[in-house]
View 1 (cartoon, rainbow, N blue to C red):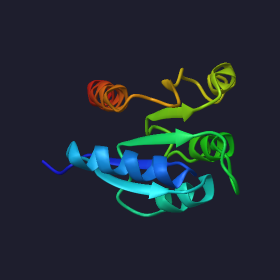
View 2: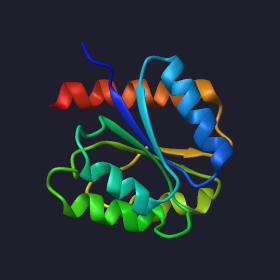
View 3: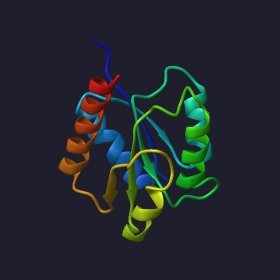
View 4: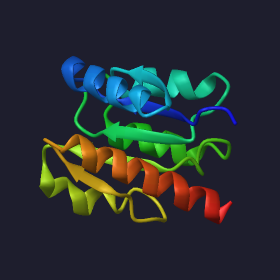
Length: 129
């Protein structure tokens, strides 16, 4: 079975590198983008990721704009998303970004929590497809 693919959309280079490294060490194939525009360009390529880790506050195109465009595309709209943000006040706003409640992890996030959330969301996505 091929490794599951994860798209990390995060503007902080250090966080993006750490996330990429821990996910790859855990057996995932990772593609990283430094803003929402790069993330959308990544989605336009094949194969699609099985999961997106999405920061909200980014330059060029923020996580809200990314999510809006993701939901507008039928091929991308079913890809599960885990939101990462240092601003806990944004949790309510992200849950108005579509038809589902998105998992929200407040930065800084323990790496074991991230890996557990990724496994949980991917397992749930397999069950519901």
